[in-house]
Image (cartoon, rainbow, N blue to C red; front, side):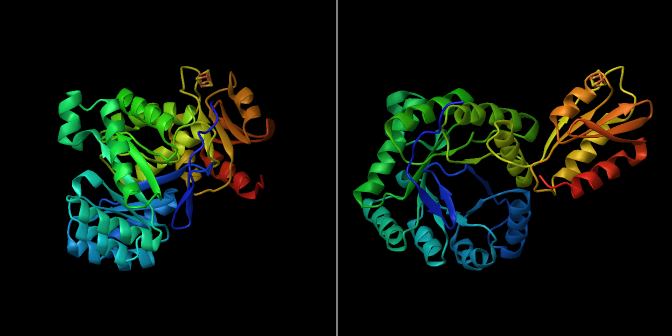
Length: 351
Ligand code: SF4
């Protein structure tokens, strides 16, 4: 794994982004922002799943006015996502949001953008330049013919220059496409040219069955190359799953601590219901903050071996199960008691 690229440090509320800080996880609410109570319920659920920063859509002035109460009660920093109307950006800042996501190219005349940037500067609030393959400037698109990586990079450089022109450099950048190679190339190219912190993501990645894989491939490659300071997995589904997927990507690369499950695929040697047990263990581990590694194995072929690498392990053995701690057998228990016994031991354990 390559060393993390050196980027500038900014702060979204209390969360550091860039400058070598841990990669933070973002998501976006899928509620009507005007319904602040529903939006806050979703934010709290996302925070419980491990979300560090939340973004909310601001399609109109009523939504912008709801940002104040949302921000006040939110347990994590709030970013307002604004397109087209600079007045919404100004109102969002008045309402006290921790960050803005805009596309400077679609805010309109220079004087409108200048008003937004001066308001950002006054409050020292960071802004994300969110370049998306689906909304590139017409001129750039005409020149490149299609939304390729160099086109995304040119757009991002042009948009960051617009913000710099008005004296604001608390910036992070995203260059998203739904195509994984285009996205990866764009981030690679941009990170060679700029040290602004990067928000990485695969845009419109799809429903979970497809989007989880695309995101894991794309974001996994970027993170492996040391690119990315904050991340969002975009799924057509429950945003809690976006956050869980992001956490799993980070854990898969050993970039985040937390519970980890290892489970065998099962085969003809399996003697207990490992599928059910693994899924129950996975669910119960979600509520645990400890960096515990648990192996759930179907039989004694690989079970004790994997269990010795894990903090805890269970291995099926003729309708019963053996419970391991750090590779040593603790006890043999009935299959129906395995889950509770395992969780009891994990509860007592201090890493
Ligand atoms: S651990 Fe045992 S049950 Fe699981 S896949 Fe391997 S051989 Fe099959």
